[in-house]
Image 1 (cartoon, rainbow, N blue to C red):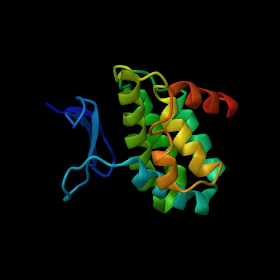
Image 2 (image 1 turned 90 degrees about the vertical axis):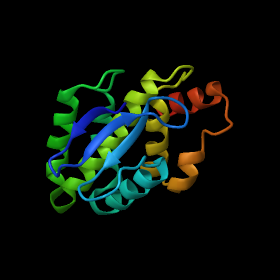
Image 3 (image 1 turned 135 degrees about the horizontal axis):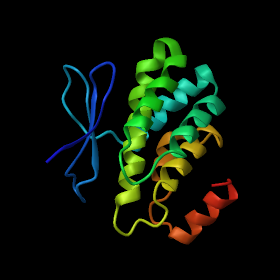
Image 4 (image 1 turned 180 degrees about the vertical axis):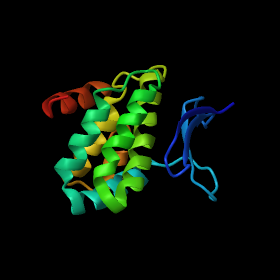
Amino acid sequence: MSRLIAKLPDDSIIEFDSGSFDGWCVYLKRPNKTRYAPKDTQYFTILKQLGSIYGNQEIYDDFVAIYNCTTSVINNSVVEKIIDISLKYGKYANEICIWFAVIYAGMVAEENKKGAILKKRIKRLGLYQVLIDGLDPVYAANFSRGKKWRELDMICSSKGF
């Protein structure tokens, strides 16, 4: 059964539902489009493109503001913060709002996954690699696969989180 995370200003809906592993799969339903589960590669690519317009550090800093408020529970004040942050992005406000809301939901999911040790830090690592280190979004989205959590923890710690 789906659980609503957010209904955004453009009427897009972000929700949790069952996926291939558990009930923490994030789905996006845009108006007049089919609901689907966005992949890290998709929103990493879009945010990298927007970083080339607004500055990678600006996008990353706004993400960190959301990251710092993220817990294991969906909080409407964080969704409102995402909407407020997105307004400064002018004609791309809607895209920023959608993808920050999807990443927020992904971080909440990571905080709730059984056996996940790094939790939301894994999303931050990927976005850091794309926006700050300049890595390819596909590479960053797959970077953690097959790596031990201790190695990833050391990498995150070396980057300050």
